[in-house]
Image (cartoon, rainbow, N blue to C red; front, side):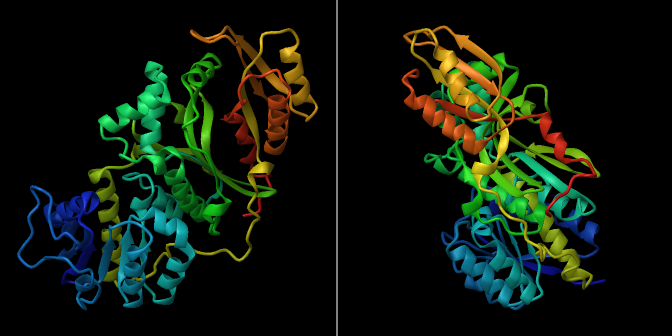
Length: 448
């Protein structure tokens, strides 16, 4: 066992970097007892060379130039916390090529360049850890890489964006419209000034791309992940869903089945009594469904200084353990499988659907819509007609379908919208519920 300290350098001292530096400083003795040797922070590089109030470092430890970390021969672990896909990628590759292990929270970079980063780590026999890239303080990456290694993972369902979950929770609890809930999220610090990455589903797409790649053993490119945000969800949708016994969440979904792998991000109806449906506010949760383990739920804070720095420091400790006990690469961050399963296009996905139509007020409207659905082998589970909302002249009709194919639903909706019986474009929200248990039996044949 090693006796001297493992040396760490941090690049980026923003919100998360500050939390990491503070944790290493304040919990150094605890970490040393846990490991059997100390972790020493020897350099922090930040372009502004400015620390947040209340954070102090010894003279000379804070520098402007990342090269001071990358070129220091004593630094064994580089922690990248600047984000983005430009300089961050260069820093990580330079570190690994120089024989340094890397810890990062950079979900966008991993989603865009995961295979290159992992192969570089393998080529240079260094560790690449990124627990903090998905769901903040929830140890979901480690769970999939290690805890579920005995399982065939059939599906992942996740609420992985706190901004969207906060907005939808407020829309549900107080019947707010989207714009009102977004304004409140900004006011309370849950949404950025430009929230597009969150509310358009891009952040969730990055995260489910990482998780699905780990779960199924093959990298899932972002271009193969269908994404829809929450900007079109209305208070009327929230109300109709509640009447049917559902709540609406932005879900990140990955499934492996006989035909291949499907990965998608979009609003979805969940039965109100299920575990995921009860996850409120800015919290995250990921449901892992595998065989033989069954369903397992991970829940906690998905963002913020404390939650994210907890995950980063946990990775630092893991890498330090490998270094200190000379067990590099004891568990590769990612192992590519030889047999690649096909990635299914969104048009081939099968699930249940909620359709909301603002209709003209004349006889035969529901029959016409039902005919368009029936012509495409789409069975209707229920129909609810609502009186016109206050200030509106047209009634609303909601349909719940049984399991149908996405392509058929899209064709039917195009026909309905051209039929002259609806006033606005039909809104579609997919439904996820217990019927998905059909893929978890040991007899199921899977491609991964």
